[in-house]
Length: 202
Image (cartoon, rainbow, N blue to C red; front, top):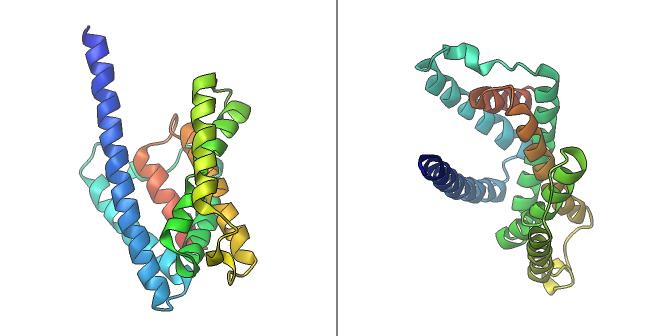
């Protein structure tokens, strides 16, 4: 009984953190679009936001056990690759939000569950039930209906932006897979700080 309650509590906590993260992410995306409309270069947005986040991460880690040592990765090579994926994802994100409507960009992101399930099965060996497969498939169909690339909104869109849209779910999903693997060896602070450092360096 106690184990069941503990598991339920963990699930609820995880869901609440997920909702909070999505709200903060959405607010950040809105700010990104405003910055893009002000003709601020995408690379400048990436670097400045990364440096600010690194500072906050370092401050938050100082009072914890282990201090700033928690920021350094144990899986250096994998974290470096994860950082490179983050750079591509960030630049694609900034470009998409600058030139496309927010709902269109988010529709592209919502194709991620299909890729996540497929990558998880292929690379991590995670099973997928028929019910989960059907639900993910329905969600993907809904994404296609909402996105509707044949609508008039896309008539004046440069061809390269279609590629940018495709990169969004691909890089997002790749990042999730790397987090699943790296989360077994590295701290949350390290995963956050090091990928921000790689983004700033490039």
